[in-house]
Image 1 (cartoon, helix red, strand yellow):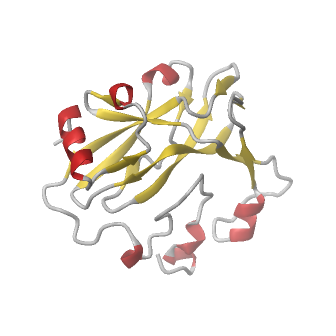
Image 2 (image 1 turned 180 degrees about the horizontal axis):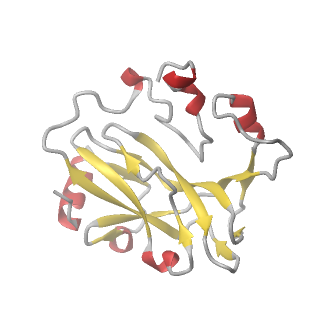
Length: 195
């Protein structure tokens, strides 16, 4: 079951679902979603003079991105074909009986802006800011302003709560993240990690 605005408000009031700061609930809470705003931090992918990135190499991944912080009132220009990691302004905490889906806003989609490539899911138990995988699929640059509503979060109720939710007990690598996070795929078992 997908949560309605009334369900979302009830869960927020109970405190088991957290979206904070939720500065303007009248605007941010939609009929079946919560609009999330764009944060100030971005990780930009550099045009590298290397033949490829090896996902199991933390150094190659971290050398490939550079952090950019946009000051209050500034804007980030997302050029056609660019891919950057951004972050939500809000921090979320998803209870063990819900799963959250990160979706783009249709108004930005009509400007060819997408907010996730593949990571459109927040597992039960996840806590932290959400990293956005921002792309411009259009032909013109688009100005993104920190604080603008960039994405929406919908919530689906699980039939039963997760037995092993995302979090510290699982060693979940993105738990508690603040700001955009580059890939930590080198922590996966197939690359010698413990995930």
